[in-house]
Image (cartoon, rainbow, N blue to C red):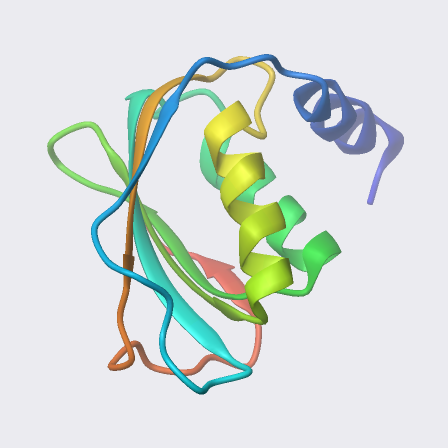
Length: 123
């Protein structure tokens, strides 16, 4: 990763956020691999949020997707261990992009999420 992108990403790691995280259900029972979807609202489009979300997922080892939604939110599907997902959800709450301002992250654990081999950005 180029130094410009690394510097941009690193700025987002120190973001302070009072964003609310809402869990709609409990983690999946008896599973070492957890699957969840997240809807992130706030200033999360047009600020490098998807790019930096992918960078955070790659660093943590989470697999899945991130995409912008037509209502101005960002949608994420993530697969990993409970520890990985906890770290990833915290990154989403803070807003991995230094230009983002996250208001709320809604998390739903869902066993039907398709397993991916990596983490990708969708348009």
